[in-house]
Length: 72
Image (cartoon, rainbow, N blue to C red; front, side, top):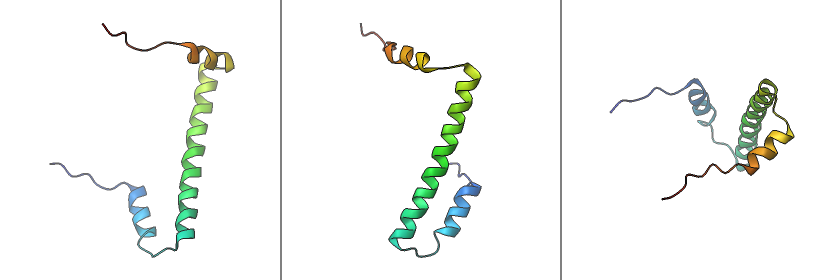
């Protein structure tokens, strides 16, 4: 079995979470992380929209696509 090293993010979080936090602090940190990763995902999607020249019509077309594998 191969062991993997912890990432720099995991190491930093371990440092933060080595302290006893109250429930509100824990909720606040979870919100911070959620907001950060949400913003990063939104930036990446905006970049894809711009690069691929997607628009609302593209989204409508995607909702009408049938990509299911037919069963035989």
